[in-house]
Image (tube, rainbow, N blue to C red; front, side, top):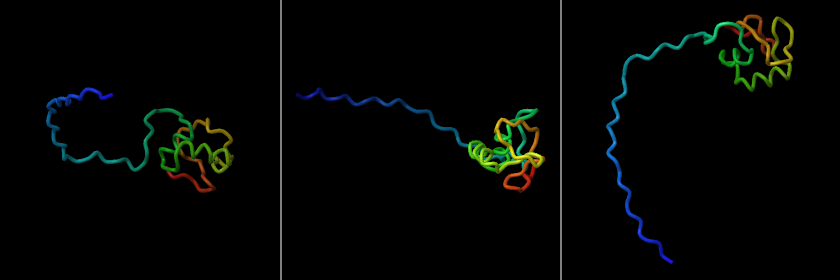
Length: 95
């Protein structure tokens, strides 16, 4: 059994793509700034600081590798304002 021949599809005319702007880029802040004010979960704050991904930080917390003011954390639900007093593997996190 043969099927009827297919008709070619018609293409619509595309609009030309405007050229990209070559202006200066916005400078990247040296210290990650929180987009939200107030306390944030420690995993989110450390991820923004470039320590590791949020999931990796949660794993590190469960392994006891992250401490706040000298006490090892047991839950990733800890809320903090900034990275002061946080250590990863005994090394302080720099703001």
